[in-house]
Image (cartoon, rainbow, N blue to C red; front, top):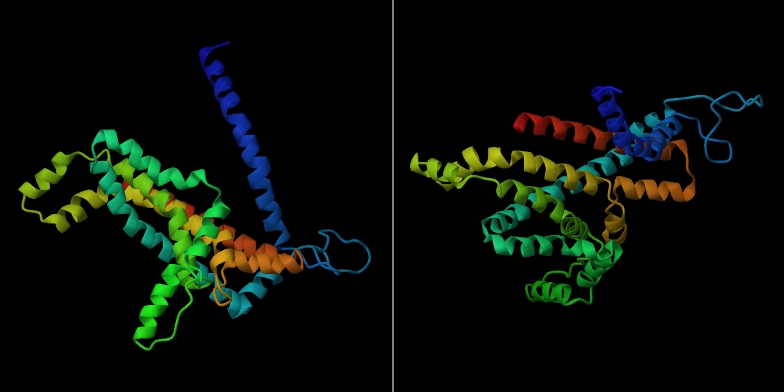
Length: 294
């Protein structure tokens, strides 16, 4: 056996198992959802058959499920709200993550591992427990809500509810997704050569010009990576919005859940497909931007 053939066999032996796993448990279910989004609804719920059953009922594929989505402004509003919530939480994560990542990168080497450990320490606890903790912190009987409403009452204003509000959704998403923005920024900032900053200052650049012309182009790949993780996790999030959103805060994952409780209809699959398509478009755009930045 030649060396090149042995190398190819070795490469296939290493890559084939994870590739088959992804195909079987990710691609195939996604294709099933996409196919189901084009089917007719069944007579008693569910999906109509793809081929003629011979009883005169509907069968085959149709675009009516997507027409249903785009003809109802409620879905457009929910879609835009989901995008806005994900964008706002990602932007807040970026604003908060950069100073933390910069502080870790500028810290002495002996302290960096401890600081990174503190960033990822929340992952050691259960996700639902962390969400429930924020429900307690933002609850009406919590000290934070009572202090805020006390201040508002002193000025003659109506009390507000922190829990079950857009504020609670943003707090929960930022808290959960912030490490996904800090880690790539820290990894990038740690590799920066301080000579570049010194050179920019020697050439007369102020702090803002140094950041805009030197630091930001260097951290752009990390920003893209953090955006990719934070935004896609936020727009697909169900747990945080389910436990912290109020009646007036409806997102696509919540809408999908409320529709599934009734029946798994083609409309549900159409909404799921559109959400999956939006995520895929964002991933492709972020990858292309990352390639241009690097």
